Length: 267
Image (tube, rainbow, N blue to C red; front, side, top):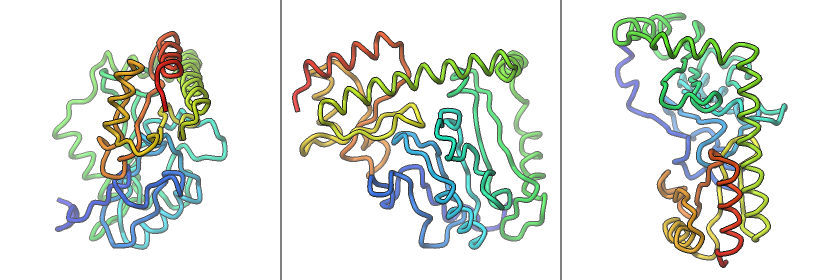
């Protein structure tokens, strides 16, 4: 069992804090109060933001000081093209003492629905009232007791994705989607909309024009341009005032959508 009260304070920094705004590039700051668990999705869904090493180091320093655990969701890490940005929390010194990293084949290898991923629980990870290696052992026991493992078919697919040929194909797919993102962003900026993301993640985060709410912007985009997005408010209170668009789609559909927005949506 984990220490008593370990789950009493969970600080979800994926999108639900007031520190998460365009003023800081949609990358939150560490919490001011003491918490036990911090969840970070980086690159971020829905904003498309990606944290710098300095920003992640602030979380690592906080976690070590407060004996907190960072749950680091790196599912979109392969979409990072800026070489100065970290793809793993473990690029930050001492992160193995406080962070668990999770990842998946879903987003960068087209495995959505196949259900194949991994979790890194370092031997160096220590939380309150535990010893070195204890959390890793608890995780191993949990997996061995409750999980029979991924199917052989999924594992064979994973091995193929990690091969030299698979890696080349993955990079082509990522480049395809990021080109979609560039097309979307360029066209929306041309219209005079304020647009974020789309450079190190496949998501476009659009500021609602005028005083439209997230759902009002969604309705107008749907009714006028026949384009569907995701209202920002669906991601939490801090998402109000924005709408998310995704680069996951066929190029011809992306081009058709942005053309319709240009021709039919009136600011």
